[in-house]
Image 1 (cartoon, helix red, strand yellow):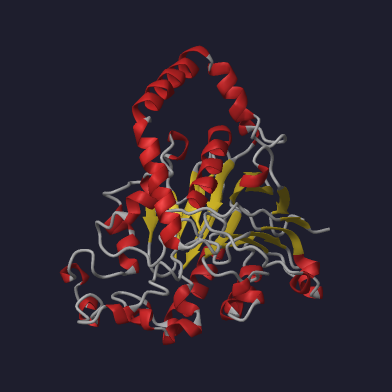
Image 2 (cartoon, helix red, strand yellow):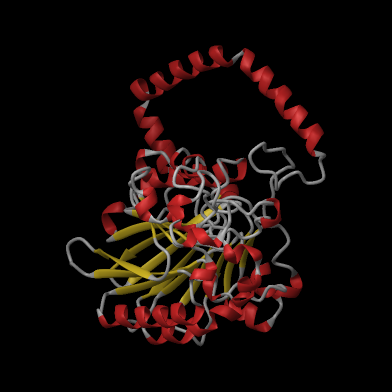
Length: 420
C-alpha cells in the first residue's frame, strides 16, 4: 500500500524566493509586501518588548510545559536511550531563508530537540539558484548559518553537491565582457573578482570551515565513518558527486564555470566512484550508506519525466546492491519518496523537500506504472526531511512533513543487508 501526502501553501509573495508568485504580478506583490513591512515597523519595538517578556516567562516559569510541547513531536516509538545513532537527511533547501525553507527548517529544529541527532546529511542543491560566487558570498550565511542556528543543530553537516551548486541555469550571456566566468580562473580561482565567479569550489571545506565549522563538503567522491558508541561498530558513508555523471549537463553553458563540470572528467569520476564503493565494502563495516544528489530511482519529474536523469545513475545500481549498501539517499526531485524495489537489497530515499516543492508530480499516470507501484512505499509533496535511527541490525526512516508536524508521516524499517 502506498502512502501519499499532498500539501500546497497558499499563494504568497516572498521577497527572497521569486519562484512563488503563482500568477500574482511581481510589482503589485512587492508593493503589498513593502507596505506590510512599513506597518510592521511602526510596532516593532512594542512587539519586541512583549516577545522578550514572554520568552523570559517561558524560560523561567514554564520549562515543563515547553519540554512537553517539544516532546509531543517525537515519534511514539522513539527513545533516545534505545538507539545507537541518529541523523537527519535534508536536500534542496538553500533559498536565503525563504518562507518555504523556513517551514522545513522549523520542523527540523523542533525534532532535533527531542531526537538529538549526531549530524545532518545534505543531499545537495545547497544554495540556490546558482551556488556561491565567492568565498565570502553572503548566501552561505543567509541560507545556512542564520537558518539552522539552534543549539540542537550545532552538529556536523556533511553535504554533497547538486547541479545548482555547479551553477545550473545561470545566464552566462549576461556576463557580456566575460570577466567573471572566464575559464582562465580554473588555474587560480582566487584571482577571480570578488562576488564574480560562481563555482562549486566555494562550498568545499577549505573555503567554508572558517565561516561555519559545521560544514563539510568536497568535490568528487569521498567518504567518512561514524562509530557506534558501545559496540564500536562502524557506519560508513560514501558521498558521491553525481552532477558530472549526468551526460546532458556537459552541453550546458554553465558547465564552463570555473572549477566546474568541465574540470571533472565523467569517465574518471565514475571509475573513482565505483572503486570507492568497493573499497568501503572491504572495510566490513556494520552499515554502508551512499549519498548522491541525483536519484537512482525517482517518480519525480527529473526521472519519470522528460529529463531522464536516473538513466545516468544506472551504473551505480549493481555495486550498491552487490556491496551491501542499505540505503541510497538523494535529492534533486523536490519531494519525499521511499522506494524499495523487490529485486534489490538497497532501499532508495529521495529527500529533496527542504524548501520549494513541486505540486502534481505524482500523477495517476506515473503512479500506475507497474514498476512504480511495486516499489513505492511513500511519497509526499510537502516540505520535510528524513530522520534516521540505527539500533543493531535495524534502521528506521522517519519521514516528517511540515503539514503533518505532530507525528511522522511515514516510517520505513530497513534490515541490515545480509541479516534478513
